[in-house]
Length: 115
Image 1 (cartoon, rainbow, N blue to C red):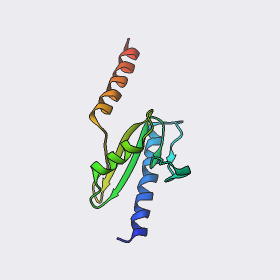
Image 2 (cartoon, helix red, strand yellow; image 1 turned 120 degrees about the horizontal axis):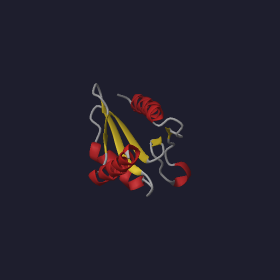
Image 3 (cartoon, rainbow, N blue to C red; image 1 turned 90 degrees about the vertical axis):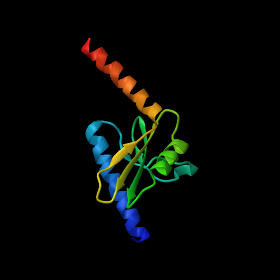
């Protein structure tokens, strides 16, 4: 696959992710990021809470994607990699401590609402 085709495939995947995040986060400002804007890194998907690195291809490097998210994420965002291998469903990866923090917050809100 040529470089242009690969970039197009990645851009289409990012647009799909933006639509998916907007669907589950109505009213939130969600958009594709712009690479190296103003000399600093931005996420592939710019949304509240998460710092999303999106990788699409034949065999994307999951660990490298998560490392990239962690190295560039600001302190107030949860780093996440969203991966889609060709002809396979997409999946998300985050560090276990970040997942537990997210679950804890969700659980506290859930139990508060139930009371």
